Amino acid sequence: MEYSHPLPAALSRFPALGGGDGYDPDAFREHERPCGDRVTEADADRVVRDAGELAAAVDAAGRDEVVWIPGDATLDVTDLAGLEPAPGVTVASDRGLDGSPGARLLVRDPDEPNERPRPLFRLAGDGSRVTGLCFEAPETDFAEYVWWKEGTAVSVDADDAEVDDCAFRGWGHAGVEVGRSGAVARTHVHHNHFVDNALRQLGYGVTVFHGDPLVQSNYFDDNRHAVACDGFADAAYVARDNLCGPRACGHVFDMHRAEEVSDDAGSQAGRRVDIVDNVVMARTGPDGEPETGIFVRGTPLEGGRIVGNQFAHPPMDDPRGGPGEAMALAVDDVAAAGIRVADNDFDVSEPAPR
Image 1 (cartoon, one colour):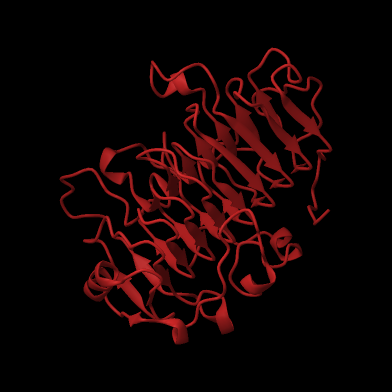
Image 2 (image 1 turned 180 degrees about the vertical axis):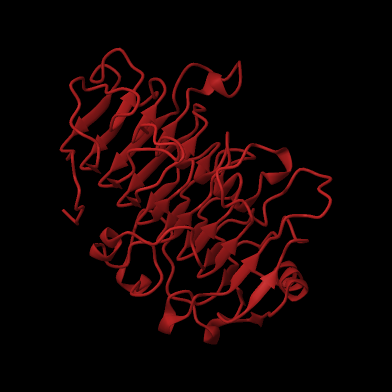
C-alpha cells in the first residue's frame, strides 16, 4: 500500500513496530489482551479471492475457523458493509510474511451516496480477529466533512477482539472504532499502520466510544488524531509503544470531555487515559500551525498516566501545558486530577527505543 509521504527513518529504529516485514507475533506476547499466533494459508478453513466469496465465507464460517485471503489478491469491497464474523473467527492474510504486502481490500467513492456508511467489518462475536490485511479507502486528504465520507474499516462490538498486523489508509471516520454499541472489554489493537486517515471533524486511527482498548506498537501518521475517545464514563484507553510520525491534522492523542459529545453525558474526560512510552514526532499541522501532542479536555474519573514518552515539542513551563505544546491538560491541578506526568523527553529529533 502506497502512502502520501515516505516512512520516517525513525521507524527503522523500532523493529517490528507497525507489523509487516520483521514482525513475528510468536515472539510478542501481551498476556492481558488477546495476542494470536501467525496465521498462514495452511490454517485456512475457507480461501476467498473476490468480494462475493469473502461475504459468503464470513457469513458461513463457524467458531474458530479461519477465512483466508491470499496476499496477492485485491478485492473491491465497495458494495460490502457490516461483515460480521462469528465468535472466534479470524479473517486473515499474510502482510509481512516473506515480503507479502497482504491482501488489499479496496473501497471506492460511491457513485451515488444514499445512506450513511457502515463499517466494512463489525466484530460482534467474542474473540474474533482481523490480521494481516490492507484496508484502503478514498479519504486520504484532509478534506472538508461530508456525511457520506464517514467510512470505518473495522468496528469492534464484542469482547476479546484483536486487530493486528494490518494497514489502514483513507478512512474518513476511523481505521478501527471500539464500542459504538456499548462497552466492550479487552480489545487489542496492535502492530498496525494507520496512515492518511484525515477528514475535518473526523479522521482517526483508532476511536473509542465505550470500552478500554490497548492500542500498542502501531505506526500512526497524517491522521486527524491517532487515538480519540468520546470521554464517556465507561471509556478509557491505553496507548503504549506507538510511533506517531511527523504529520498530523490535529492533536495526536485525544480524550474528549463527554459533555462535548452529548449534553447529558457528564463533565468527565473518560474513565481513565494512559499514554505511555510513545513517540510523538508531529509539531505542526498541514497549514503550519502548531499541533498539540496530547489533549485531555477535562478530568478522567480515575486519572491516568503520561509517562515515558518522547516528544519533538520543547519542554513546558507549566505541567498542564497548553495548545501547541507536548500536552494540554484541561485541569486545575495535574496531581489533584490523578494524572501522573513523569519521565517524558522533549526536543527529541532522533527518537529511539529507550
